[in-house]
Length: 130
Image 1: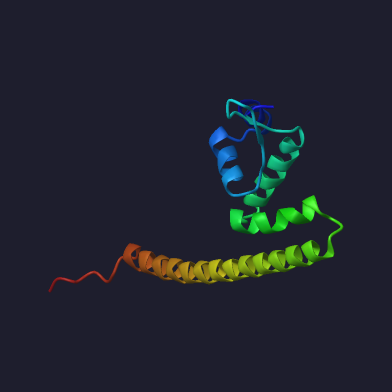
Image 2: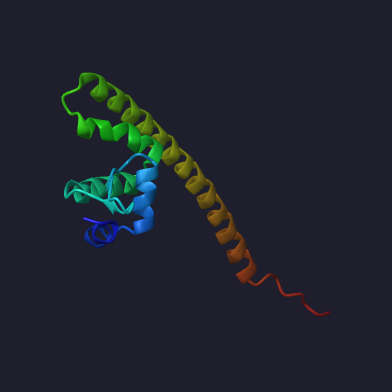
């Protein structure tokens, strides 16, 4: 199938599909006219790539994980993929910890702002005339 059909079948733009190829995530053959042609397997491959991107992985990480799909019985590939996935999980854990710290700081500011708004809305003592 050509790039337009793969795009329609996967919902991924032709530009993104070309990017996937540039990054080594997807392969195609070329016609004599230079047009890209993809196998039916490319639909599944693009779906997997999208899932990995949605999980927050970069193309650099994805390219290290995909060989495990392509060579599932290769222990060396499985070990390298495991290492890459653990590194990615550690990165995600660090991101989560950072987000929790940011949320906690924001909660503190919200509480301070709430107290300040309450003070502003409470009428102060009225000065009495003599």
